[in-house]
Amino acid sequence: MKLKRIYVRILLSACITATVLFNACAQRYNRYGLPQYAYEYQIPEEVDDGWQTSSLDTEGIDSEKIHGMIGKILNGDIDNIHGIVVIKNGKLVLEEYFDGFDRDTKHRIFSASKSVTSILIGIAIDRGMIKGVDTPLFEFFPEYEGTKWIDQKYAINLEHVLTMTAGLDWNDWKYPGYDTRDTTQQMTRSGDWLKFVLNRETIESPGEKFAYNNGLSILLGAIINNTTGQNAVNFADKNLFACLGISDYTWDKGDGGIVNTAWGLSMKSRDMAKIGYLFLKNGEWNQKRIVSQEWVYKSVIDYAAQDVVLGTGYGYQWWFGKSRINKQDVETFYAAGHGGQYIFVCPVLDSVVVVTSKYIGNPLGEFRPQMLLVNYILPAMLPPVSSEAIRPTPAMLENYAGKYEFPKWELKATVGSRGDRLFIDLPKSVEKEAKPSDENEFLYPLKGYGDVRLDFIEDDTGVITQMVAYFGYANITFRKIS
Image (cartoon, rainbow, N blue to C red; front, side, top):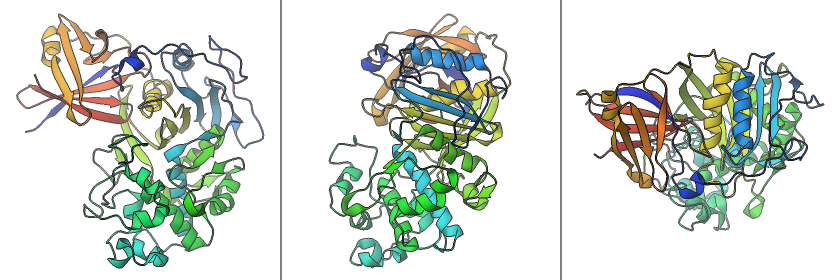
C-alpha cells in the first residue's frame, strides 16, 4: 500500500520518564569556571592551535537563535551539555563550555573514536600498506588460525567491517552496556578481544544488513597494527594527529595492550573540530593532503539504508543524516559517541559542529546534540522562514489523534485534538499542547531535550497508520493502534 508523508513538527521527549520530565535545573558554569545564569556572547579566544576566530554575525549566523539555545542550556531546559564548538567558513565562531569543562579539558568521545580509526585505515590504504576494502578479513590475522573466521574463511571483507554489515551474531543495543548478555561486555571479559570476535558466527549474509558492532571496530585497530607494524596510537600520532597539530590526547587500551579503537579516545573539543574540518576539506589540512579525497567520499556514503537508529545511514564508521530545516533538505555526516559526543560536518553550510555531553546518568543522551544541531545551530545558518503560523483545521487534527506505540521499546503515546488544538500525552507526564509553527507543523516544549519532528503517515485512503518521531537525525516509528 502506497504511503504519503505529511510533515508535522512537534517537541517530544526522547526519554519518556518522570526523571527526565521533572529534572531540576543544574548549576551552569562559564568558560572560566564561574557560575553563569545569563548568556553574553564572546568571540572565541585565538590561541596557537591553528584556528582563526571570528564572530557569529561576521560569518552570517543568526546570533539570536544561538543566544536562545545557550539560554536553554543555562536554565536547564536543555541539560547535560558539556561543550559546544562551531566552525563556520573555516573560522571558530562559537566556543562555550558548561559545568566546569573548558577548552583544555580532554573529553571522552567514546564511539566517535571509530570515525578516527576509519581515517587511519584510509591513510594505510592510500600508502599501499593495505591492499583495499575488498581484502578478505581472514588474510589479516594468520596468527589466529583455529578461529572460525580464519579456518572457515568467512566471506567477510574489510568493507563489511567498516560498514558494520559483517552479519555476525552480535548484539550491542538490546541490553544495557553493563549487562553480561551484551556482546561487547562479553568481549571485554574474554581475555582476548580479537579471538572473541574472530570466533563469532555469522547469522546474516555479509554486506546485507547493518548491525552495530564494537568488535568490528576493534578489529580495525588490529589490522592497522598487523599491516603497518605500528599500533593505532603510534600510527595516528605520526600520520594524523601530528599533521593536525593535535598532541594532547589519550587512547585507552584493553587486554593484552590492544588499542581500544572502538570507544577509547579522549580529545579536546577544538581538536575534535580539526577531525571534522579535515573531512569538510576532503582530506586536506592547511592545504596539505592527509588522507585521499576518495577515502573521504567513500567514508560518508550511506551503505546501510536501513533502521540505523542514530541517523538515516551509515558509512565507513561515520553516520549520515538528512533533515528538512527551514524548508530545505540539509545533509550532514558525523562521528557519534555514547552519551552525546559528536563531530558534525555539514558541507553545504561549510560548517563543523562539536558537542560534548555528560556520559554517565544521561539516558538517550545521544539524541540531544542532534536536536541542538537541527533545531538551533543549522537553522541559524540558513535563510529565515516565515514565523507566521498557519493553523491546521480541526478535521486535520482529528485525523492525527489516536493511540500510538513503538513495540520494540514498549513506548506508547497519545495524540489528542480539541477543536483547533493538538495535545500530546506521554506516560508519567503532564499533557501539553503542541503549538503550530507552520502549516502541519507543531512545537511541543518539553524540558531537557528539544524539538522532535513527527511525520504522520497515511495510506492511500487518507487514514493515518504511523507516526515517525525524529530526534534530530535519529528516528523511531510508532504504529497507530486506535
